[in-house]
Image (spheres, rainbow, N blue to C red):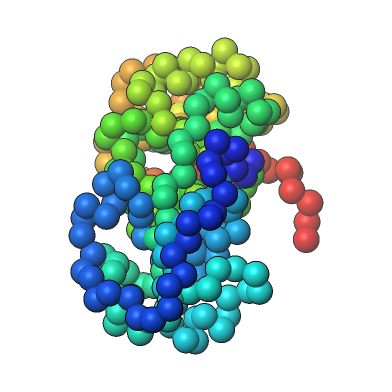
Length: 269
């Protein structure tokens, strides 16, 4: 399900002024409600291809600019150092960065009504790199939406976008005030909601087998699912792992769970 919201205006106000960009340091305020910087080849190319995006500035080194496909907006040429100065410390930008408005968040009811059959639900996952990796796995295994709590979940910043490698443009971001209530809505729409919990005796493959609509529910790093969220799931299941390991990283667990939930959905290449 592409994140193409018709309410958004077309990309008509892109900054394409010639010359060098201002040598302006990144400010945390750049990613608090206003336009965000996206960086890295996959993240930027996916955003440029998304008609729901409203762009402001595209920066690229001469080498990166030569790799842009025909028909995209003209970038402002910049050195790698100049791009560094516009992004958070340590951002690996591969010579390209795009300043754009955030995508609109979707409403769970609308995603359900659009015919989604695979949805991920995150209960207070807080690390932006994990969140980006989960977006990427969701896209790889055909999950149409990803539910996040309105509070206690990170915004979709450039760090998330880089880790997602373009997947934030195709997997719909859904925000919910109450995760347990969102699970009730999914159950009412005939979704089988499966929460991952290491203490469960039910294996994940058994839990998702044969379900036409599945929602995979993952808890926060370390603490796992909150009791109220676990109670709201149709059932809890575990990923069997070797006894010497206590648990998996949440993004790794998500990838395995999404694969199990979508097994057989994609033809062999």
